[in-house]
Amino acid sequence: MKNSSLLNWFYLSLLVIFWGSTFALTKYALVDFSPLWIVAIRLAIGFIIIFSILKFKGEKLPRGYINWLWLFLIGMTAFIPFFLICWGTIYLDTSIGGILFGIGPLFTIIAAHFLVQNEKLNLIKFFGVVFGFIGLYTLLSEDLSAVNDSTYHNLFPQIAILLAAIGYSIQNIAVNIMPNISLMQKTSGSFLIGSSFAIGIALFAEGAPSIVILDISFISVLIMGIFSTAMASIVMFNLTKIAGPTFVSLTHYVLPIYVVLVGTLFLKETLQFSQVLGMVIIIFGIIVTRFGSRQKNS
Figure: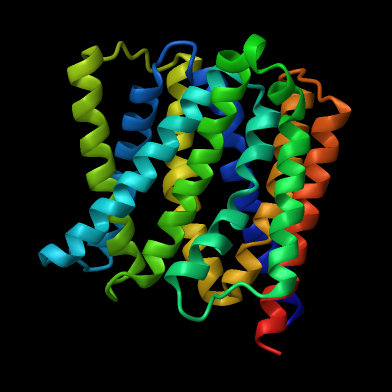
């Protein structure tokens, strides 16, 4: 049992590193690649790896137009959030992006109240959501008070990250309520749609990218495709299977802190007190909502 618990925490640590490193890697990738091409290459690499594993396991891509309608939705909720994060990272420190993205579980709880029969809001979860949005307001307070001076360079990119978090919340619910095909089929199909869509738009809007294999920008995109996309999906699926989705949700408590540490240590970013306070209140709100979810089953 002890070894099993240690393995669960090891997988959770990998997931935090894979997902949390995306913000810093995007900073490096943006030196030579546009947000569209970062997303296109990242999703294409993710698809190639997951599809190869799918074939190795003897599975095939799903059939039926209903499945592919769902996979289109999931593919778009991969492509659009990836793009919004890349675009927002042009203007924001990675620390702020990570904190904003960490509010995703609160959007999931709100959406699940309307879309999932057994995930209704109770009083405790409601208060957790309120705390989360108080933290969000605290985080954004300075930009909201100076909206005329900083709208484009601060507020709009922060809204983009929040929209990305909402997109992932929709994806999380869609993956769980769509028809019962394997998780590898869902991932392969959604990555195929997302990467095809991204490559098509990028080629039409910007033409072919200039790729230098040993350049830090391409290496950053390559790492995101392999680890933050494909490997993160595999780790998440395995961890969900052996430890359950509630344990996986612990990443949302740790990820903002990890992103802040990476931004501070490696990118020399600094945080204001209001931003640290906002992060603490958001994490507290998520903890309260998780407690409310457990109360539902007691």
